[in-house]
Length: 309
Ligand SMILES: O=c1ccn([C@@H]2O[C@H](COP(=O)(O)O)[C@@H](O)[C@H]2O)c(=O)[nH]1
Image (tube, rainbow, N blue to C red):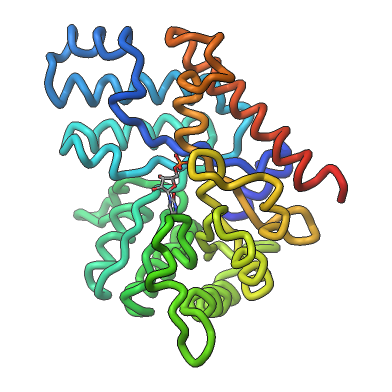
């Protein structure tokens, strides 16, 4: 799957992931009204609205982007109906040949991690048939339970030819409270980065490992160090746009081959129509605003990162 992700990034010249983080407040009235009329003003209605909103955004952007990152929490908050919308979104993105990164941030004791890995990347054998669970291509994984929480994901990724991005240095303001603490004189995120590189070496695609890392766009100095520590790991970079990460800071996340990082934007794309620069699209044409925001993001990254290389 890492080879497919890289091929698509190269083909589209777009190291971009669109984050599918639907919030009720982003969904235009015409979509919610229709969904409520059909399914009721309840969780089923909300889930239908989320699904229709996602579908319109996917239809408007899929030819420009290699990958999407549905954030499971945004679906989970609506219970089982939300999870059905999550599954429909994953399936539809795969129909459109997009690489799907499930932002699930799981990780637990070994046996529980196995269940997470099977549920999201693998399948369960019932009788003589295997049934896939959510069936994303990559997931995000929390490494802070240690390697026994990671190994089940490594095994399932190898078996299923899928991949994962391990949280190394997150983009949020308080990420340093634990992640920057010194261990033998070096910050904890470096220690985790070294482990990611080690796991990655044993799980290689053609040129990059299918074991990647999450490093926030909001910490570019740390991104530079981590790029060196994990030369063969793809870095998933959240924090661009809405969280203040700037394209001009992102060059160090890439390797000299122009690869090695993929930049996520969620609110900046899916709720673009709410931003002043895309106001002309209006609520009805929200998906066209998202398309324009992807085009602008691609240009922003190109000018800041690749134009002078
Ligand atoms: O360090 C991290 C890890 C994950 N995220 C997730 O990425 C998106 C960011 O959304 P924006 O709207 O582009 O800010 C969201 O799903 C986060 O849960 C992150 O931001 N930082």
